[in-house]
Length: 254
Picture 1: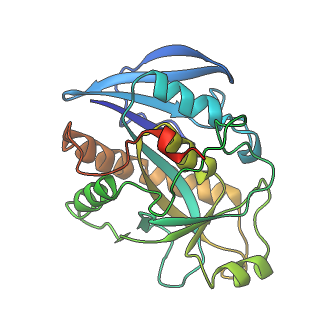
Picture 2: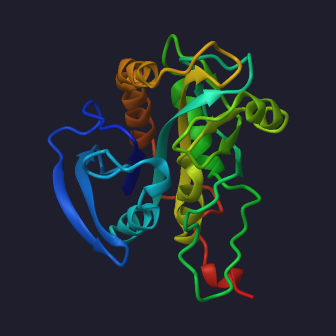
């Protein structure tokens, strides 16, 4: 089975001696790192580009997802850092989102600009992959994981205002900048998709200040744990996923 990983940070504990490959796509060249894990092939994409320098609103999401699709990836795990809008979700916790709210403004969000394609997003994440991630999180000690959460996707690159957080905290739990359009594009390509989010801070108004270096520092500390969860999850994957994610996009045509 071919598995895709999307992350904003390299994961040395997950990818051992990876091979670097360049994939040409209609949206530009994309660098993938590939290695094996048990019986599976893993394809890693640094979502912010090989130099990790692209801000959230300039990520080549179309190229990233297209590169995974033409590599015949069937399941995608998206790893990201988020802020919490709820006092019950604390820095260091993990969240497996089940839904999202999109407030982005300027990103291309579909592969279909010349056809009337309307993919069903009633259940945007693969329930089977989400359950598998949760199961493997619970195998490890000292892991606080939330099995549900609504992810608010903002445009960036600025962080949110305290007023925005007060407003959106009524309908969402965590906030980040990268989930959309990844989850939408993966659905358009018929791939299973799940997200594992590390809470690195409380959102604006819920803590005194939001230093970006603290976010990066917490992720670096937790990276071995996240890699271990992904390893356990990938190793427990079955070729036949009991879900409805892979589908014929033609059925979404008007």
